[in-house]
Image (cartoon, rainbow, N blue to C red):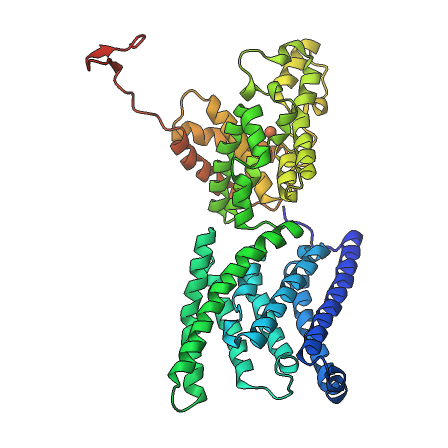
Length: 497
Ligand SMILES: [Fe+2]
Ligand SMILES: [Fe+2]
C-alpha cells in the first residue's frame, strides 16, 4: 500500500520548476537586503558597497547557503511540497515580510521589540511543528547574517546581534510548543504573551552579563520591549495568516474552522437545499474527526473534508433518499439512469468545490469517497429487470479510489453512518459487525490500494467508529407517557401505550 518513491518524469519537471522558483526567490531576497542597505545610508551606499565588497559577497554566499538548507530539507523530508512552486514562494514571502519587520523594529524602535516568534508561529500554522522548528532556525541565522551587514552598517558584530539571534532561537522554539495545541485566536494571543516569560529572562541574563551593575531603567525598558515584541508576534501572525492562507490556498486550523461553520456558503446551501444530506454530512464529519484523531491524522482537516463530501448532491438533491419526503423520482426512472444520477454526485462535488476555490483535498475527498464501489440497489434492480444481463461497471462509481488516509476515513465513515442509521437494533456488537463488514468489503474490492493506510490503522478506525456510534445512537430512556394541562393535572398522552 506504500506509495512508490521513484521519481517520475513529471516529478523531475516539477522539481526543475521548483529549483527555478527557488533561484528567483533567492534573488528577490537579495533585492530586499539591497534595499535595506540603501535605506541605511541613502547617500553613501555606493561607497559602502565598494569599501566592503568582500563582506557583501560573503553575505550573498551565506544567504544562499542558508536558503539551500531549506531546499535540501524539503528535497529529502517533504519532496511533495517542492512539487508545487507556490510553496517555495510562500516560504520566501514569510521570510521577506519578517525580515522587513525585523529591520523596521531593529532600526526605528528597539531590537527587543522585534516579533521574534512571528516566523515560528506563521510556519507552525501553515506547515506544522517540525517544519516550523527548522525554518525558524534558518530564519534566525539569516537575520543574524543580515544584521551584520545592514542594520548597524558595520562589519563588527555587536552584542545586540547575538541577543537578537538568541531571542530568535529561544522565543521561536518556545512559541511553537506554547501554541502547539492552540486553535483559537484568543489562545494564540495568550501563547504570544506566554513567550514573554522566557524573553524577559533572557533579557535579564543579557543585562547581567553585559555590565557589572544592572541599570534598572534600561533593563525595564528592554523587558517591556521584549513583552511588546512577543505580543506583536501573535498579533502579526493573526493579521498575516489569512493573507497567506488565501494567497497560497493553505489550510490552517483557523481557516478550517471557518470552512466548517454552517454559515460557510456551500454548507449554508446544503442546509437549506438538501437538509437530509446536511445532517448526514455533519454526522460523517464527527465520525471522520474521531477516526483521524485515533490514527494520528489531522482531525480538523478530516472533519472539514467530510462536511463537504456530498456537496455534489446539491445538483439534484431530490434524487437522494435522505432528502426525499415520500415521492421517489427513481420509481419513474430506469435503473441505469438512476445509477448514473447517483454516481455523478462525486464528480459534481469535485467540480463544485474546485469552482468555489475550495482546498484541493476537499475536492479529492468528494471525488474519491465512493471509490469504484458498485451501487448495489440499482444493480440489483437492473439484474431483476434484465434477468442477469448487466455489466457491473455500468452500476459502479467512477473513482478514483482514495489517495489519502483522510479520503479512506471519509469513505468508511460515510458508509458506516448510512448503514448504522438503517439498523433497527444498535448494540456495540451489531455496530462492530457492520463496520467490520464495510471495511472488509472495501478491502476485497481494492479500494485502499492507492493510499498508504495500514491494517492496524483500519482496526483502530473500526474501534473508533464503534465507540463513537455507541454515543451518537445511544438508546434514550423511555419517558413516562404523561402530559400536564394548564391546571397542573396529569393526563395520559394520546397514543401512549
Ligand atoms: Fe456520497
Ligand atoms: Fe455521504
